[in-house]
Image (cartoon, rainbow, N blue to C red; front, side):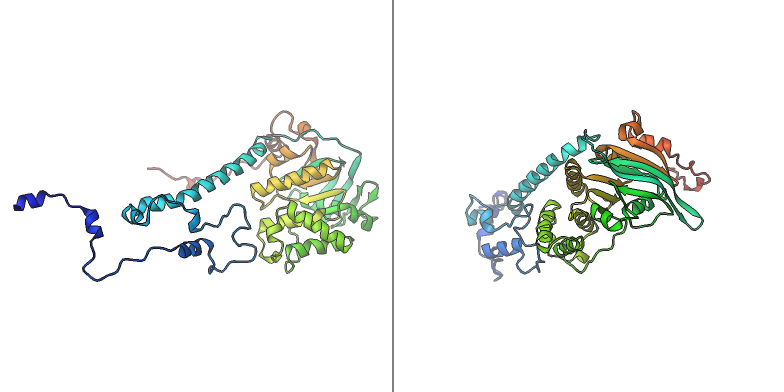
Length: 374
């Protein structure tokens, strides 16, 4: 064979790959089924309590048996490594896509809801008369008066420093007013505090929790503090853990909970003694949208069963979607109060809030912030 014919002869790379190597090096061993299973399950990865594979529906244990292939081991060696990797990853991507689609499908109805539905309301459940609070020479709350009917979902909105938290603390019996009164039904909160506290569930701002207890222990402990018998407190604890989706974290210490999980646990504890009125200060702060949807459903069900909810929030959209009654507080005074439709008067609640609470004038003198694009 001439030199030119030798140069034109095609080279079979597959044959070269199958020829034994002359350098004495052995090919790398193929991954075994045990190795694949170990990599997926993380047996030596230091699993934490409550996080083992199989306890969460979104996490599936992947073993070698889950990856089916029609090719023989020899064919897999001859194939393109990039194609092999993509074929093995496909089952996980499909599963994740299905779960994501299911999650988005469950969120769609919440996104479409733009205002609260009709509710059957009873007699006045909470009445505030002339509530006033002074801190030295500062008038924090000035003669606040309004009432909320049984079965209502009432929102208190206002700018920062308007007196919302102070008002809620006086309503719930945590802060004595300078003057004025609060009644839950026919019970005066400040003249009959023991009776009133059995009828009220409170979620105050910056609640301090017994964080060296587990979530389940915390709920049971609050139940006993509220006068429940031990068996009754334990039964209600189990129900609340499931309702608030805290079951997988029930045996973790509260100190290890995230801010959102603490808020969910605190809200669950306000319901354990079946109060007639819930007074909640920013209950959805630090809560993710999915968990917020769960909490809203729980509170709406509570209101449908005859409970009364009073909450503060900076989210006008949330108040418009779930509340049937709203009070706007500015500088310690109630500026507007009534049903959500009455207060918003044909426009969104956020727009009406901006009209009622005129914000500061645009800041002048910051021309040095202007950035030139050249």
